[in-house]
Length: 524
Ligand code: HEM
Image (cartoon, rainbow, N blue to C red):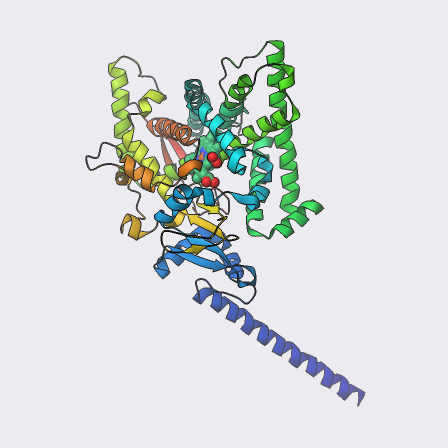
């Protein structure tokens, strides 16, 4: 009897277990099917958040697929409690309207300020009066001839003394190198020098580690995470000092210590009369000189202002420019006919120099004056920024209800995501060949001059309107100078079979880097 009862209960449990597994499998299959079949599947209470999470690793491509499969350029997405929380758009009219025409209604907002809190009260992270004052001051500094010359001088020096020697070393060794890593080192050294006047020495043959570069990577990882989890969760993680928030705290400490150290050194030099900043026209030196030299000018709030200024520019300028160059090189490698045309332009400029008895030695580095002649190269860079915009999406939140040019209603509390990446992939904007790398798109019909109207109307890689990128000219100088020097002196080839896909990051990067072979070109 006892045995029979025991057997019955065992078989009962067994049956229950089989039934549970059966229902669990059905449930999993049902959810998988729902996620697969419906491009924006919605769930009770959770809205579309599970679908977003499911597609997180391919977010930009997923958003693009939605636009294309639904044949629209704007759609809503539901967040928690099925509230209409998000508006995604790739309509150029909406870009122009939100970023320029009615930009006053679309500030960065408190959420973004908290997510990017490491940037303090810097230009990138503030709105209204605080932003306007910094914008005016930074804009004046960027227009100074001294600063512009210092940027060109620094970029040329880093290319000549570090970037090309590193590539020469790789070519001689016949080894392969990760171009993404090299470019991040290149832009870190140049942005640190132009912003703070200090060379971190990150781009050296030995490929050394660097605590500040690591701190910036860690901070960006935490910022990415903060963008996708509810604020309550990451704030709790910060309180407990765990995960990405632990790394963020450390990154913050490193950034503070390093930058404050540099500012204090400058203060010492200024007060002791040993200042070299007359020769070094970095952004920091320009700001420090403009504030006067007396001790009382060095208040705590002024130190914080200088710290925020430096960090904002370093973060704004490093990964963006490296990403712009990386995708450019990759696209050029895949399109030899474009490379050929760029080389023609470079050879012509080089021949002119030679004719004037100026240059014949290799490796040859073009200077800032030469860059003006590189129209096709400029168009090729615009085209790679179109297809792979380093800032792939821009997020904005309206403060008042508004109707966008395409008729979409937006309300306070909503997040508007403008997808630059999807915009490039819209046949209705660019034509059927939208996926092709065609620098000619940005040239007038004569094929020799840039179509500047089109650039200002459709190239949103740097944003537009009052918050348009302050470093745009600087980025072009850097990208054109580096691209010309590398392509003229070396042939870059992507290692066969190297996988290229998007990394989950704020700035468009490659998940596995970009392994390349480098070969020296013969003399022209
Ligand atoms: C290819 C390189 C670059 C790209 C694609 C790029 C893109 C952008 C974009 C899209 C914005 C607007 C962000 C928004 O509306 O929230 C922006 C803002 C900004 N960028 Fe860049 N950027 C690049 C390089 C640089 C460089 C080299 C610097 C300076 C050293 C720089 C400094 C800034 C600053 C200070 C802002 C904030 C402007 C403001 O809010 O008024 N950027 N950038």
